[in-house]
Amino acid sequence: MCGIVGFVGTNKVKDVLLDGLKELEYRGYDSAGIAVLQGEQFSSYKAVGKLDNLVQKVADFKPKGFAIGIGHTRWATHGKPTELNAHPHLGTSSYVVHNGIIENYQEIKNQLTQDGVRFLSQTDTEVIVHLFEKHLAVEKTPFEAFEKTLSELEGAYAILLATKSMPDTIFFAKNGSPMIVGVNDENEKVFASSDAPLIGHAKDVLYLSDGDYGYVSPTELQLFNSDAKNIKPTFSPLPTSKLSAQKEGFRFFMEKEIYEQSDVISDALLGRIQDDGINFDELDPALFDGINEIKLCACGTSYHAALAASYLFERYAKVRASVEIASELRYKEPLLLKDTLFVVISQSGETADTLETLKMAKAAGLKTLVICNVDNSSMVRLADASVLTRAGIEKGVASTKAFATQMSVLWMLSLYVAQIRDTLTKKAMQKQLHALREVPNSVKINDALHEKIRRLSKRYLHGHGFFFIGRDVFFPLALEGALKLKEITYLHAEGYPSGEMKHGPIAMADPELFTIALMPKTLLYDKTKSNVEELSARDSTICAISPVTFDKADDFIQTKSHDHYMLEFFEMMVALQLLSMEISVRLGNDVDMPRNLAKSVTVE
Ligand code: AGP
Image 1: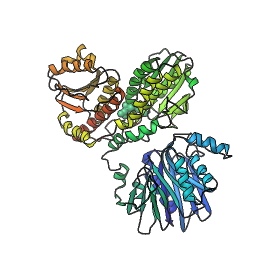
Image 2: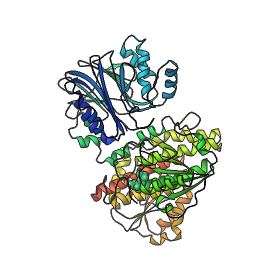
Image 3: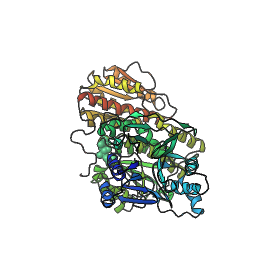
Image 4: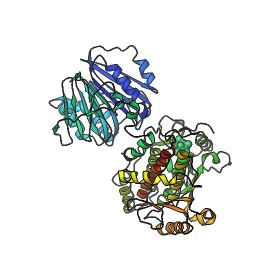
């Protein structure tokens, strides 16, 4: 997720911008930049890679006196991590920084190009500053030009814009991406994507709402709401701890990332769900020419996403889908045929085993695709094509939002391939698209659910093991639930197909055997129910997760009724993530940094 900072004040612009970007590093980035305006003079600096590269570039830049400035750390979504794509983006007399995705950027860019505008970057963001300057030439005031610009943007954005036409003013807008503005006793203004950069520079803070926009100057803060009404800003006191600010009030990064899933899934879907199908700007449909099999390869949580996706590819795209654990594929002398599309899934894009299998597939002449969360990673650079999951940096070692966005992208990809192979009717596609649009809502957490799970977690702090069971895509989800529990509570757990329990594991059934049963209403409910009843009849302790009440369970987590099983999948995913986290809290473990684990396993 990108980071944004802004400042209006005296003698501190460079420090406030750079310190602010440093505080936002936790959000993840692959390039950074600032632009400072003093009177008629803009100074702008950008650098790829770590923030220190930018700090070195601005070492001799020592602005004195009043200035306005904007800064940005970029997490690449449209366009590679390069200096040209780094923010701020320049028009002719204005600079802009932006966090989010402008869904209709291509049509705006096409129109502006026809008007003679020359674009330097591949980003969606650059259209904002050129559109602003187009309106600046005709509107009465820069603010009206800014309002007109906003009225034409679709998608999610947090924007700061500085222009020579009003050299003491920063224009701002917030819709779907976070942004706040702080003020201090000297009436200086500081903007940021989260609290941390404001601490030490502001006393009171205004948390902007979606649709809010306006401008600040040394003497003013003018705020307008989504109805274009000029409203009085409501300030709150700023938290004092930077670390808690980075966790944005949550106890752990993992908790924050579970709660972020709704937003990051929205980002993953943005610009890809069309009215009548799926679009991936970054893919050429020819990638799938001559393909009769999709082989998905990954490790850990990403492997679980791959396994769940295999059901979707076969069900919707009617293409054979096989799944491999990377560390196994490496040494089994596999049969890699050229009519197979080799798809690797990796949050980090650096996992050694997965990376090696990608090299094997390329060496065997297969076409390759990576589903990844880090744009400049080794796998993205190596694969023929890549689709970014846009989860933003994931700090918790136990993967949550990365898995959620992998599943969102893979579901869309199965429909994209179904489009190419014409295996879904228009009606069937519309049913899928309708459900996909509901995913962000399905992972929103209500306090009652979290409190229920927190309370029941006290019963699961011991026992001689857990079974997580489910059928179809709920079997990979059961595997994922078991892995979450293992990696942050250190308790033993197994994910198992619920139909397999009677082939041996049921011998373990007794009150000390905890079974977490995933019982979706819309997929094989009766089959799963009878499997669970077999366990309950043998006195196993059952925690059922289902929209349908189940009187043979010792514990029950009620989920919502949905008309598509994948929405049940996402909602149950959240319940499993919270359950593991709350058990880990009770056991006093380090939720974000579990023992023996690394965030990215770059050795085999
Ligand atoms: C997930 O909770 C684990 N931390 C781990 O299994 C992880 O999914 C695995 O190491 C693969 O990582 P990758 O997605 O970055 O390739």
